[in-house]
Image 1 (tube, one colour):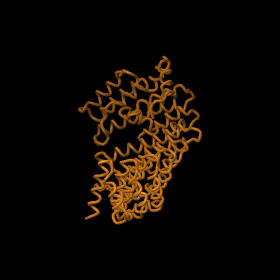
Image 2 (cartoon, one colour):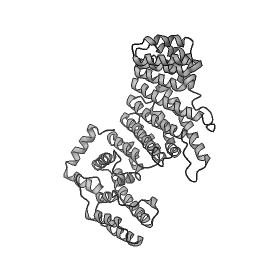
Image 3 (tube, rainbow, N blue to C red):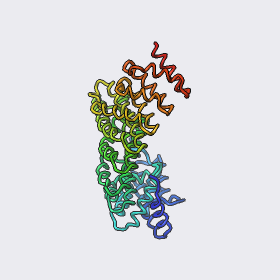
Length: 443
């Protein structure tokens, strides 16, 4: 969510106050144009060194850490890029990891005291600034690490009696580098019936978490099965929000559904070698998770296909298309079990047939795209597709021809004659599609 008027007002009011500046320094929130204090520069110099023994390195770092005067300096030290990665396995990296973890604890302890304290102005300043400095996840890694240790406190603010601060706390919960299972219950507590702002914040946070996992999967060492397992606990929450009374919440929840479906598709189509130490059982588990996800989300999306809001219906069509792709990949896998959408497929077909008469052209186009994915299985909608050949929207007429061709021998009688009429269509692409379809029918 972008900064709203009240966030800007809070930020502007308190940052103009001298007392607010002092609070910012003590809390470790970023200051504009700040330069690294001497203890932070000393830590950087030590981290760059390679000639000291691990014992000397630890001794020097601890002496310099002891000189950090406030939480702002602690945060600056945490943000240094010179810390050795623990993955390297070196003795220096082990020292760095231990000292840095202690700094994270120190920063988190400061945040915890403010979040649990009675001073609302300090809590508002802290949340406003942490939300701003972590919104792009480009910087603020030390801040996010500290926030991951105060999720319980953030959850209490999120479900507390101040909706504005609650929204910021929810946004931070969605950015913290912790397993989804660790925050699912906290998010659920924030779904207050009288606070649509917070329900929207939860829906958007769930979407952000799913998008991050997708980015991880698309990386060099991505593991789709593990990522999907991480997010499986959020499926119920997403489904609940898709039925929210507020249209913006429903739309945001469908963004999360789409990301989860894309993650399920990544699992269903994953043919990469298994990570070391994992057998075929791990792949079967991942496939099972993708199948269950498809079943649960399919039932939710089916309801959204009839939403009174056109944009929500369009988003639901996009989600259904992705779930159809997951289903197709799973059905091809002999180890995946039963059809994950078998129980709702008939209902989907009925709704897709109705969608071909939707007043919104984009919904009609999306419905035709989904019917094309189904191919011969879309035959129950054949008559509705024939009628779509006369749709006022050229893209819909073009899509109807493609659906009829995908149905093959299951296409309704009169298909060739109906397509023949499109040879005189006013749109060149529709005419070309009709010519190609007729050639295929003659073969």
